[in-house]
Amino acid sequence: MTSSRWIALAALALTCSTPAMAKDWKTVTVAMEGSYAPWNQTDASGKIVGFEVDILNDVCARAKLQCNIVAQDWDGVIPGLTAGKFDIVMDGMSITEERMKTIDFSIPYASSPVAFLADKNGPLAHMSNSGKMIDLSKDDAESKAAIDTLRKELTGKNVGLQVSTTEATFADKYLKDVANVHE
Image (cartoon, rainbow, N blue to C red; front, top):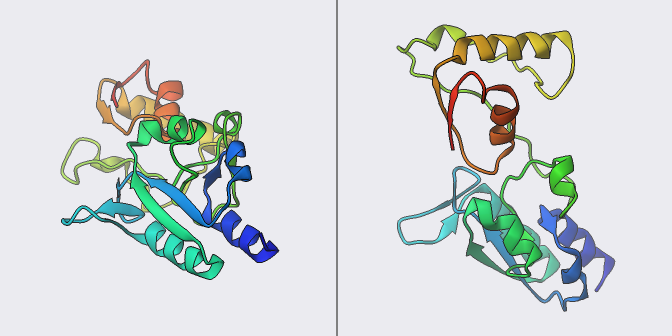
């Protein structure tokens, strides 16, 4: 394979499994959840569309690869990848140390901040920080204060989130003992 194809393939992949490196690489099977708009979602016809699909199509065309998209439930993307069910996962996955124990990541192709959402007229509406970003992964005074505020405000409240995500890990670490967390 030419070096330009390897570069394109690296840009294409959010995650790659080591056993797939022996593959021919003329056809690549790419897993996406198909329900994470605007990154990827399933349209009325059942086709997966969105930002990641657009990136994938462009990179595959440049690399002269046939890329086939398959739908995969979120909690099955890593097990499916390691089992060889598909070659690559392209699904807005955060790079974590825990995930890096099992899978390899390419360089990130986008970054998306995470936010708590609440009813504008509900009891948590006052928590808005007017769009100010706080990096809760840092161990500094601002992050600790933000987490303490979240814990206080969410005590006894219901928090819904997607399973097997960095948000679920965050909630398990910081909110499980004070809030009703629903995955």
